[in-house]
Length: 130
Image (spheres, rainbow, N blue to C red):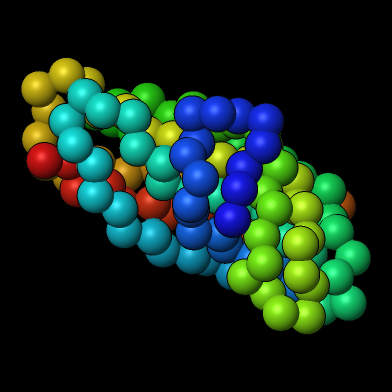
């Protein structure tokens, strides 16, 4: 998998894909981060089962992290991970977290992800900072 054009993302990442988001859905993610270092906590994008690509989702921070900052960057993900859609290129939003220097412990952020008009998912990302 490759993300373009943002070079800071690296070459290999996990990609969260859904064929359709449920407006009532609530997702919970748990991530680990090093104190003071930027950590990728989500890569959000979607496509349909027939490989039709959806636009990059809108990502809003509903509740910011108390002990750090959230940064959202647009990118394009190219992957062969899905055999029915080889070489698919999907517009994504990549979410990063950076704790305050010296902070260790638990933090969280709540995001709203909207990939189509009228559909959204609330994602709570719990972050264990060490």
